[in-house]
Length: 312
Image 1 (cartoon, helix red, strand yellow):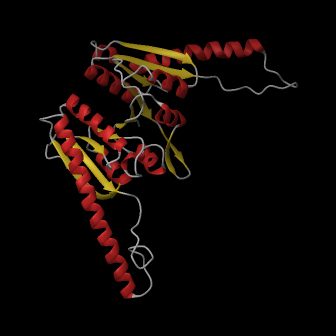
Image 2: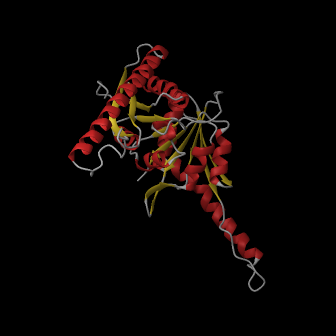
Image 3: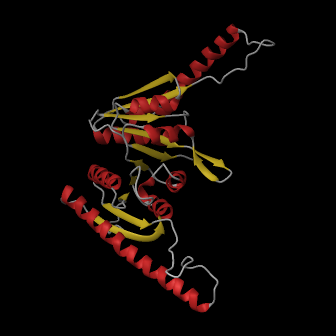
């Protein structure tokens, strides 16, 4: 836990190269915000096997075997915790060397990656993770653990990914609705913080119309629908930035509407951006909350880091 009352930047690490890349980016984000940095290691999401067979903590087999299994599991857990402490402290030392004067605190938790990151997100100004790792914090968005984190975290979540290492001095925000005020405001804040331009993008497509020999849709009818829809869609990003231009007069902000697949448009825009900001629109599904297809596409294919901003 951070010793400062100021909300920290929290980064999840597990010692992998991808998590160290996330750590380096988290250091930059903490310095930009003047915030402390918390380096967090959590337990991997598996049960501990006992030496005599079975799984530590399982019931059955009588009192003797039960105690042995539990004891072996506890020993494995303690050994793993010592290892994670070493990983967290080494990562914290790397951060201190990179940014002398930055307040850095290593932390190890017995929680799994999902629980630890979701809980950290409630008090963090930003939570940072990588895109691939050993199955702990840095498996983000290529596995079920990280998808659950992204679907439930309550604060901004940065996914450090991409191959774009050159600064473009541009922040991109993707908006789906004119009411996406939280991610747009976040984009303005990031653009100001980085002295960057802001692009607020909105993409739309008409649904496919069934055609056939019995009832082909009139061409003029489709043209009228497209014209009406285009006028409506052009207002979506304008509504999203309404009032914010006046709040952030120092930010060069422009809105763009395109007839295109939103995932494709945002991935393409990420090639010339330093950061992409998305609203985390959560959908209720049979097995809980899930992110939408646009967020999935961008998180898998963006050329630069992506920040998910939860919305109501």
